[in-house]
Image 1: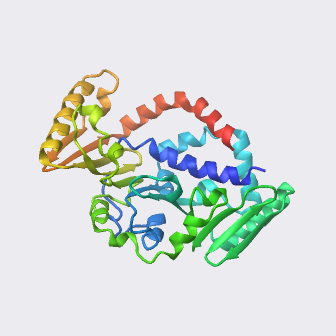
Image 2: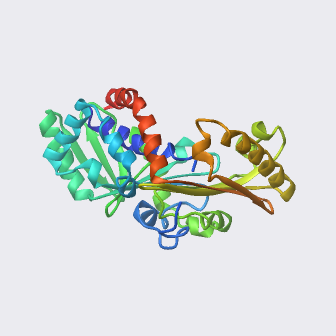
Image 3: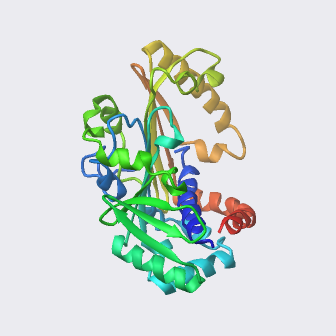
Amino acid sequence: MRIRSMHNVLIALSIAVAGLGVACNKGGGGIGGAGAGGATASAMDKLPKETSVLVGFSWAKFKDSKLFTMLQSAVPEQSKAELQKLKDACQVDFMNDLDSLLVASGGNMEKDRTLIFVKGKWDEDKINKCATAMGQKENKKITSAKDGAITTYQVEGEQPVHVAWQGDTIVLTPAAMEGDKTYLADMLKQKSSIKENAPFMEILGKVDTGSTLWAAVLVPPDNAELAGMTNKMTGGTEKLQAGWLSLKLGKDLDCNGGMRFGNEAEAKTVAEKLTKELEGAKADPTAGEYLKSLTVAQAGNEVTFKLALSEAQVDKLLEMAKQMLPMLGMMMGGGL
C-alpha cells in the first residue's frame, strides 16, 4: 500500500525543491506575519511561542516558474499513474491543488518538535471521503476517526497517521505521521503563540512571506553548532545570532537575505571574507556570469546580500539542470 508514503514523499519533494533555491526576492506579499497568505496565514495563531525557525514555500507561485515545468517532465510514469489514480478516485489533483507549505521548529531543530502546515484545495470532509475511495480502489480498508481536534487515518496493516485540520490546511508532525500524536496534541492545547516571541517576530519582519520561498531563523544561545556555522568559512569565532532569506522565482529570479552577528566587528569580518570570495567567484568562467549582480553589504552587526538573475540567465541555468533530470526522475520514482 503506497497511499501514505506517496503523500509523504510528495510533501518532502516540495520542500526539497524549495531548498534548491536557498542560495538566493522581489517585492510583493506580506512582510512577516502581516498580510501573510497561504499556509503561513493559517499557522500564525497556532505556532508555539518557542518557534525560532520558519521556512515557507508557495507551490502556487512556484508553478508559474519554468523550473516547475521542467520538473514536471521528470516525474516517472509510475508516479504519474499514482497521481492519476488519486485524481480519479478523489478529485484531488495534487500537483495543481497544493497551495503552500510551512515548516516550523525550535532553534535546535528537533525533529520531534517540528510542525508542517500544508494548504491546498481540500478540506477534512474531502480527504476523509478520499481515504475511503482509495481504500476501495486498492482493496485495503482505510478508516478515519476524529478525537477532539485530531483526525486519525488508519490504513489496514500500517501505523496510524494523525493530523489536525484548520479549514483547508493540514497540520502534521513527523512523529504524528508515524503514529505518535503527543506533540501534535500538546501544540493544539498551547495558549501562547509565536506572536509573543518578540525577538523572532523582529527577524520574521525582515522576510517577504509573499515570496516563492522564504526562511527566518533565530539562533538560540545554547546552539553552539548553528551559532558557529560561519567559522569554517572565515576561520574565526563569529557567532551567528539570526538569518533570513526571501526568494522570488518566476521567469527571472530575485532574492535577498541577511545574517546577524554578536557585534559589528564580527559582521565586518564575515562581510570582508564574503566579498573577497565573491571577487574570485565572479572571475570564474562558469559561475561568474550568474554572480555579477550579487552584492554583499555590512551595517552594524548585520551582513546582507542581494542577487538578481535575468530571464535569459535563468533559462541558461535550466538548460544545464536538464542534465540532472534522469537522476531526479529515478529518485522520484523510487519513493512513490
